[in-house]
Amino acid sequence: MEDTSNIISQEKIWKDFSERLWEHYEHHTPKDPYLLAQKHFEEVLKQSVHQALKKINLKPSALVIFGSTAWGISTIGSDLDIGILLPELDPNSQNNKQRIRRVIQELKFQLTPISAVLFARVPIIRCVYRSDTRFEADISVTTPLVSVTNAYMKKYMNSHPLVKPFVIAVKHWAKSCKLVDAYCGYFNSFGITILALKLLQKYKIIPVYPLSIVYKQQDKEETQDITKQTQSQYQLGGLLYAFFRFILEFDWKKNHIQITSAGLFFLIFFANSNDFDV
Image (tube, rainbow, N blue to C red; front, side, top):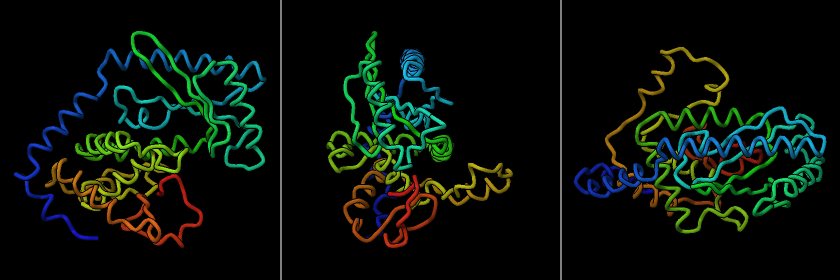
C-alpha cells in the first residue's frame, strides 16, 4: 500500500475539511435530553423483554447493552443493541441455533417488533419506540464475551480525542453509501469500526492494545508505555482521505485485519477468527 503520511500531515490542505468533520461530530453527538429519553426507552424495553421471556419460561442472567451505545460512539438516531444472556443457550453452539430462533420468534409475538430476522447468523428482532423521539433497538441472544468486547472497544474509543469523531465520520459515510448491510453481504457496523481503528493504528494515532488489557489490571507505568507510542500530528480530514485510500488498495482476498495485533495478516493464518477481526 502507498504511504500517504506526507499528504495527510499537511495541515493547510485538510484544515477546512477537518473543521467540517468536527462540526458534524458535534451536531450528531447526543445531548442530555436525548440521552435521558434513550435511557427511558432502554428501561422500558428491558422490562418488556423480561416479561416476554418469563412467558416462555426463560430467565436471562442479564440484559446487556453493547455496540456503539456501550462504547460511547452512538449518534442521534443510532440503534440500541441489547444482548440477552441465557446460561442454558450458547449462541455459538450449532445445537442451539434452532432453540434460539424459537426464543426470538416468541419474543417477536410478545414485543410486536417492526421486523425479525430469524435465519441470520445471529437471529435478531428489531423494536421501535415512539415518544417525542423515535428509537429503534435490535435484540439478540449473546454470550458473556460481549462484556469483554465492550470493555476493549471502550479502551480504544477513549484512547485519543480523534478516535470518536473519526469513527463516527467513517460510519456515517459507510451508511450513506449503503455499505452497512450485513444481510446483503456488505459490512456490518462492527466491521466498519474495526477498519477505522486499524487505520488509526497504522498512523500511530492509537496504540495496539493486547486483549489481556481487559482481563488484568495493568499498572500505570505499563499503560503509559503503550500510550507513548501514539502520535497526533494528523487531522480528521487527512485521516479520512487515508481511510479511503486504505480500503481502496486493501487486498480483501489475501489480507486480514486484526486490531489486537500490529500490521496485516494473511487470511490462511486465521481460520478461527475472533470478534476483533475483519
